[in-house]
Image (cartoon, rainbow, N blue to C red):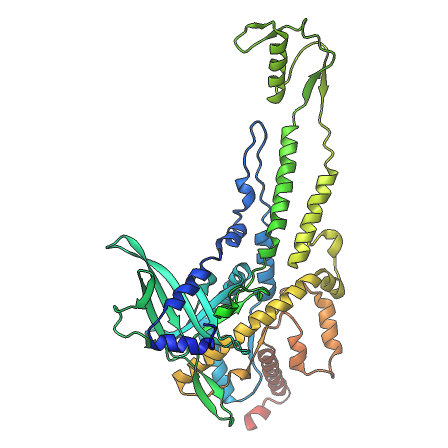
Length: 495
């Protein structure tokens, strides 16, 4: 694979019906364990496997910051629906927007996008597949990173050559699992099955490979629009891993939000569990003996027999002490445990602050926000979150533009149109608390500086500025006609 461009390598092996390289990529892909961070988000963390020590408490406390980090990062960027609005006017554009919105609504785009950002934040990457169903309707669905591989060309453009999806089915006749592989490229879908150590074409299908008929509208060198086949997938990458092992094979790895935070989360769980262990161990007062004369002390064992040997008396007392049982005798002095835990408390707090800072998750406290914080104060509190969400918006925005590009191509094929996906603007609306009084005051002061639609776009509770502007104009026209009717009832009839 090193002697030629990866795209040429792929085409040559496809013509020769040789799929060994696909099996090699699958084996490399399976070396990455996606279950670790998913377990952490679900609360199944390493502290739950803490070994027990005889005679000591064994608390296993999970502070599930993994779920807090993922929930905050996801809801901050896509809890408010993403806006898809036209940047051009005209009846054709209106029809295009209507058809596109219908596809997005039919596929529950809001929930799908939320799941994509959430799963991508955990796994580091996620996939979206587009297809025509049996009724000719445009569909899109999510696939997680543990079952898909994106293959890019090794040129500067890093063009997406193919997406490999693989999964296992149980063969009821042989009572064994069988590897099923689907390879999607710009033109076709090739279905493969495992035989021994090799992959071969699935002969159970009448047609294999089969054309997927997904195209996009592209401009050639002369500026003419042409339909061009495309891989019907979007590969969302949460964060590009800077050090990649498999780049020479066309694999681009993503990095999740929790991968570099695992040790911090483990340290917090360990510190909190250890502190609870200490509190539980010393929660009862203990008793010691000062200047105890073992020769005069009368001790009886559990069977009621008198212990006369001094060494056996020492062993008995030691055993009673280790089991935290209170001893009774003359010269007994009660001793209570004074927990000097301020150092441990400070350590835990520092670990938590470090974790939240590195993850870009605000640690909101009443002393930070007060009763009515200003917009500047809120921006300072959410500063680290804004840095993180800015990276996410660029990464996921690139994937969402590819989504609109592919859906537009499918709409063009279905309705025989030549709509341009670049007529759509994609805008995220961050779910950050705002001081609405300040925001409205700012928008009001911008009258004469910005258009009405641009000012509406600054308000977080306005989802579609253009629709809001049109609605306002319609209401103003209606109100003007009503006033005219009150002043001169015959004016409207003769108009």
